Length: 211
Image (cartoon, rainbow, N blue to C red; front, side, top):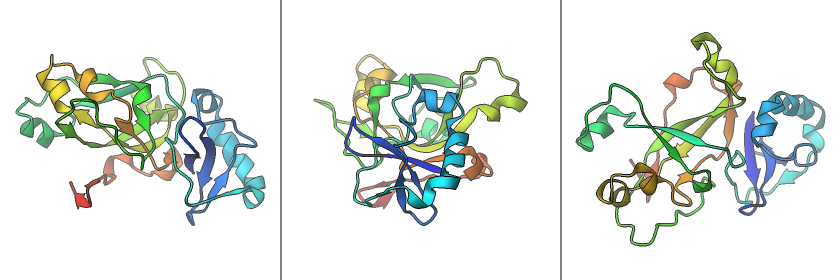
């Protein structure tokens, strides 16, 4: 399934994007795509509900704004310098251990929302990433069980204000957690939609130019 949330910022409703790009509203049966929804096996509940109710569910206008496909998560964990070429262009060594940082949940925005450049921001940068949505609480999993906890995947644009990040104290969070600095979507692809997440192509355009 492809999960969407639509409506004005702060008032989004849950929906589903069908294979023919029709959008349907599922808010009469599901409150939101939040952590409780995923933890209580909401994806499977939604799948069963759609089998009976898809045809008579309200349709959503293609002009309706799409918000973040997931409702504000408790944390956004990111891996820095995860592209070898990016480490090179940043004149930084490829790390032996993953570089972990957090982005504030308040930085989430819809996939087509405008980015708000912070006051005195001068070096806005962008990085297309694949986000993995963890569906339920887990600790110290064995590798063979890890995928059981993945709810799905999202496109994620990791905006950074490089001057704040690198030139004003060397603080990654300062440069990466401004409001609108984590646009995601347009939909969450549930795990069964992706046969192999390691062979996905991801890309972005800046002012119409592929980067």
